[in-house]
Length: 265
Image 1 (tube, helix red, strand yellow):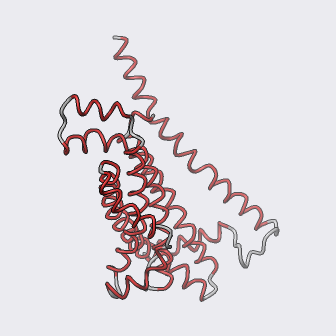
Image 2 (image 1 turned 90 degrees about the vertical axis):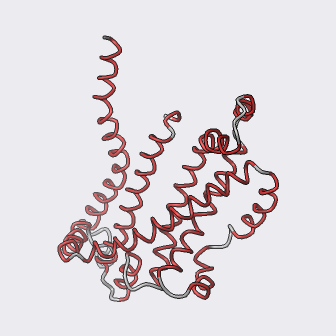
Image 3 (image 1 turned 135 degrees about the horizontal axis):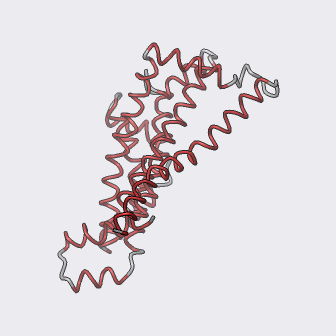
């Protein structure tokens, strides 16, 4: 009876926990918007360059009604998420292989160490030469920008795995595939999720930068186009949209981690 009551109490408290986490994420952005609105109305900032959020919201509502906002956001999200998923999945497997196999680490890690410091937006012209204009070049560049974060973090996660995990695997005579999936991958998940957060930020940076120069739609294009027209309110709609999407996706990664890595809670 007491255990049933305890379980029921936990279920009742769970939604409050999610609401509290959401409030923590939104507290500082909302506070910043309030200060910005007050400063603009008090004349402390030049509203030609920093219009109050209420006026930006009017422009945002107009774009929502016309459907233009959904068009730009849909394209940017597709570019971010497709490249993010492809690069992250490949990076996890390569990183685990480097962590588990010394020969693979000796062959691959020096290449990663040499290429990783190069800004991925800097190799976009080379990607354009190889893959041509279009979505494929954006996809490849975003995937590369995410791959390195996950490869390095996954490798470090395996190398920092407690020795007892390896001994248990040997004693239970777990095969290579079983060890990979049931021991190495779960042990590296905390570092993997740290890499996912970094990769997600990198994906947004690369996509928005590419849309500045090589796209006819998307949030990055919207920001650059509004700058060319000196439409500051429209530019802030794009900037705040990127901030909101990044915050939402980061919260999504945190929620996924709580499900996949419950022992960290």
